[in-house]
Amino acid sequence: MSEAFSGTTEVHERHRFDEGSLQRWFDSHVDDGVRAGFRVSQFRGGQSNPTFLVETASNRYVVRRKPTGTLLPSAHAVDREFRVMKALADTDVPVPRVHALCEDDAVIGTAFYVMDYMDGRILWDPRLPDASADERGRICDEMNRVMAALHEVDVHAVGLGDYGRPGNYIERQIARWSRQYRASETERIEAVERLIEWLPQHVPQETATRIVHGDFRLDNLVFAHDAPRIIAVLDWELSTLGDPMADFAYHCMAWQLPPPFRGLGDLSASQLEALGLPSEEGYLARYCERRKLPAVTPEAWRFYTAFNLFRAAAIAQGIMGRALAGNASNTHALDAGRQARQLAELGWQRAAQA
Image (cartoon, rainbow, N blue to C red; front, side, top):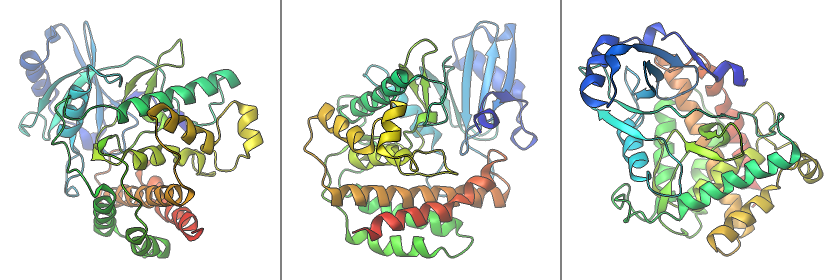
């Protein structure tokens, strides 16, 4: 699986653009002597926003652009990705250095931004098969640490007080993802219909308003080559101001998803322990300890997990919708879209435990 998404390839025909125009823009907006060399290739990963590697004589950069074609409202917000990473530059949250944002479609056809290429490891399988038991535990604790650090950032101190609307985050998210799902709907999924009805009736009290990443998972993190240390958090497209516990619960879906998803949902507590991996309960407790929060009630945690499985189903349906429309950013989009039904059914199973 990781090989299919890792590394770069030639720029896909449907994502080609005027590389000379991009180079001229680099000359005036990015601090680099790019006239000495300029090579563009495309990363295989990056479901939503096509992502490119630019190699010059002295540096490597990443360009993330909006896809072409008809897009869902508020999706593919590369400008927001740029803004949040710039704001987090001097915090305890590791992010790449961002260089410039271009909102002029005339340059390469859609808006894009440029950031540093982060040379490290991207890990795909939550079971971490290539790591020792000790390293698995340290990798998980590092993810936990960085997520707690993100949720402790003072949004006003970093200039993100207006990055989203405060309050009623979950209610607005349910409405948003319901709309996004409807906009991409290709068939009736009974579990989605039940969740759309159940979720608004069971929203727990919001814990706080913080920066939420929206897609904080193992393969959106870059680890140092020589240590279980995160050097960059990537893919901030879904970030906003919201309830950090909902964000953390999304991250914890790895403990809930069984095969064929990349998850740990089929492993018992003893199997997790033997691998050096924390249990879902232990991982949540460590996060609450780091942030000095009271324990989360089982009812609230059940809601958060059901909500995030619903949200993941809506995202998967959106990927499928783009694939059918011909403008998804990689060839695995149709497969990802087919997961919508499975995710929704898992979400309803969680909700129905109430």
